[in-house]
Image (cartoon, rainbow, N blue to C red; front, side):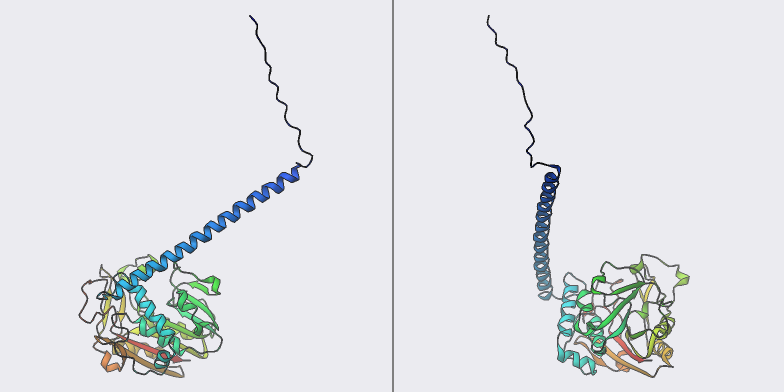
Length: 334
């Protein structure tokens, strides 16, 4: 029997003279550059798609809310409220109305909370010149507000109890955290200070911001102490603009009856304003909410206003009030 023996031999190809270690390094770098380019391209496509999807979703939710009975805090309420605020802040006629404390259009801000009058009132009264501005309470910590043209010349510092999900340090905004009753700033530092619906919470149960529940015997309103601190860090001739809810005296409670805020009445407001007795000027402006929306009012016409507390009731009143039905806005010059 004939057999054939076959032997296999494999010789490794000789390395090309150009395939040096440096060549493989360059090849690896090129491959990484291609991979990075593809990753960045895919990431940008996904980001743009997400932005488009979120815009469409927001548009749908907003339109659905506007075509509904517009009950506060139902889906779309927040979008509708901020859309209303942004439209107001873009309207020079409305800003002039707020700046000069004139009557608002009929049904202005109907079914929206007090922010729809607080933001334009405060922003309309800020100076147009560059200044060091303190936001005591973090109510400006929304990109659409922080980047408003009225704040373009401001060196903005935001001070609040605890960090929030929103942070715009890349817009040159400084953040500090702590108690308003013990500010970490030197005397006579800021040119302007705003504090919107914040002082009525000082010393009370602020767990929804901090996650920390205080013992009941340590909870008490300490707005005057915070007011004195704000005046301390305000420059002579500087301006403090802010607001507190106003009407019948009320403790605004969370679902477990812990006090979350306190509504000022005549007596409490008078005591609070005494904190500014050494300032050169002290002015108060009042806005009232009813079934015709928000409008400027007198102290007397606001004194019967009751706060609607969504933390303890989901049955809205016929006027569709979302929160406060009266606010007192103060304009203090040191």
